[in-house]
Length: 572
Image (cartoon, rainbow, N blue to C red; front, side, top):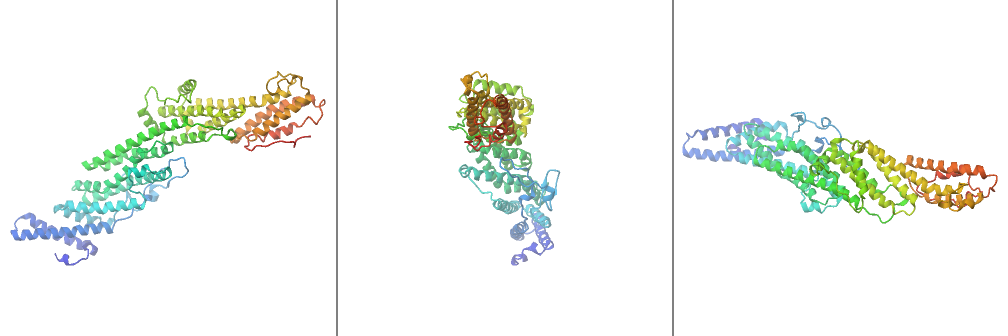
């Protein structure tokens, strides 16, 4: 009772002073429990004990508050960031980042949330309060102080308390930022913070003697912040099924699946913990369903992408670029995505029904045949068939877009560019393990076929002027009666029209561009040289506008994406 007139915190004077106070309290408790004291003295003893408990409550709170240690995200290690955008989280190992931490086993990381030197004092105070029947007051103080510490951590890392309505109103840029933050914080909290918080509670309340108090204090401390994080996950799962969200949602689902065993261990032991486990599983299920539905919506979005104007220069269409990069990014989640699709798909028919407005029956048969004959790995059957279906839908869409070009040759260049791009993306990424060798060979043949069709549609009409025994097809129709000089003139005009048009076309892949130019050069130079050699002595030089060297150099200007006109610069 002499301490009541002294406002100095007892444990600030040292553990020895604190232990003296606890000894006095324990003596008082023994006196009360003995029951041999007179009624008046016993009543006074109870009053003194109540006063002592109030003091211990203050001391306990003071020790916990004044000796808490900050927790930073750098205490945990993170995997690479899954997103089409560039960037990743820190890749330093846990051993390099954690200072003053210990491992209770090979996977569990425990850091100090309170200065280690006061743990013994906290344990002694807690044991005395629990033994005196003031366990509820002790737990309440511990829960309040530790929950404030966790709230401070979330606030410091800008994890806001958002309602479902708040999340649903977010634009994609804001939501994307918040999801990345959620993934980072969720991993850190579950794998390090909660484990460390549980360890702290076990140290204070004991892992065996007062195990119930330890579990109760832990769950009461962390439940609200954990539910705050789970509510965000639920809100994301309720949002519109937009393709750009899929990678982030898969990342959330995959992380939730990965952390599930740890959640089960952390929240075992009482009914309150069971409710957290149940809510966690429900949010994880909703995220999985959202990811699956968003993936299926992605295919529908490809099918419904309609263009009213041809894409300039016959270059790789943005849709092709988006879809292939999207599929590449999804390979980071192959196992997760495959399991989600397998849960939904019928074993006999894993494909999604194609849009009848976009895909012909022949395309469907072709897709199914390609899948059945593929050498793709069997471990991702559902995902593989869906990927096959997606690329078939994309190809069908590109066929429709190609029809927007009036120039038949440009149609072939457009399809050449896009199918080549698809094939290169598969061959140079993890997609090659999904699609297999037969798909790659088939699509290599497809873009080569487009190159051949381009050569025929472009150069046969031009070179028909250089045939002495033409059949009258193409631009050379009726040219049997043309004299050699007129043939030179016809060739010059036709070549210049091709040059003016096709210098403005674009083949962005350097190797492909060179291959197409080389083959065109082989067609043109050989035919021109043969005709020139035969008639050069019979035709005035004024009609022979180009040499073979001139033509070879001019052909190198094709497909650079910048239209040029020859005018009269080559007139001899």
